[in-house]
Image (tube, rainbow over all chains, first blue to last red):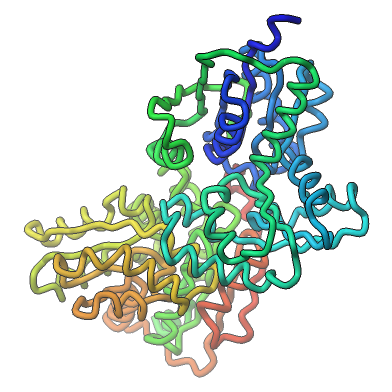
Length: 272
Length: 272
């Protein structure tokens, strides 16, 4: 079992947004090695059928398995929602999604059990967070609010732009008196966490990236799998490398100057 | 030839944005009947290969042909760019795109021949307007500027929102001293024309919807095909009907309260 701790953590997402999970992992678990896979050739998963997303997720997991990972994080909300159980059944390593850790933390920290969730239109419409919260806290009241402009604003780099503040006010001000806790249900949103917090100063923000990193840390502690490497290895792969990918990656991980993606073709991934 | 004038005009687009062309046609040609087809099942065309867009365009044209149309307008920038000649060769009715009319008008009205073009990232990267302008006016200087936040802002209904004004200033203010004419190279943009004009008060705005409607009117006049019906027929079809489609359609054509889309499956359209 001694070697287990030095094996890398595998992380996949439909794109680059999942690097916010890597960022949280790097902060909480600085000695861990990672392998990241962004399935950019097939994004956005949110607009594909559940069956297709399960196939993509399976191929991504197979790719990460080749690196002899000790644990896998599904950083994508859609894949966490529809593919998690199947992945857990089919692979030997533990598999964590991003929805359950965030739901668990929100239920734990909310005093009023009036919990807000923001995300893309599809995430909110699917009620994936609502279902999970109700499993944990049947009496909770969950208010979902789709914020479809946040991702395009973030991807344009308008992180601290007044336009983003105005949009955040438009979306979020109506929630101020209804909730005491807000889940950021989209991998991109931690990038504008400060803006969101300033619109809702009295609300506790739960971001699924950080919640997931905490649960992963707990799991590694319990199994005595925590690494203590001085120079952990970090590898980044994507199924389609574009200029857009590099720009967004630099925005999320500005402190990783050597961030280089390697392109990989997952041969058996269904071609759209 | 007498009956020709009463035949409808066919219009297709990859989605609902092309209704801005219908709006311009209704203003300039109020007695004309229309058949509109939004190929919403296959949008966005801008992210498909040229060959696939040509196939979609061909199937759309076949569908409109069934209505015995007198002329067809390709309201989609991408399809106008890659499929126009093939459609003109394969169908008996005249086929107009949106790029050439706008390019022609811009070259005509610009004194400095310093012409700006705004559109989606793909439209700007493709330089479809630049090429057309240079065919007409080789000495013209064309400055393209991608405005990727405009479509999401418009689709969220933020037409007169301060956030849209701030985004427009960010994108367009740098152009103020470089151009005297600006082409709106995206079907959605006429919805925020006032905002764009207020950021660039001294620039002449050319929107491809209006330019195309004018050229169509000229064509109908020359052929003596202008209708004088009191109650022209307007039919709207889409290949995938969603809530989103209805919302956007109402935004573009608020004065057509009875706007109802009928869903149609184009059997031979390649399935993605």
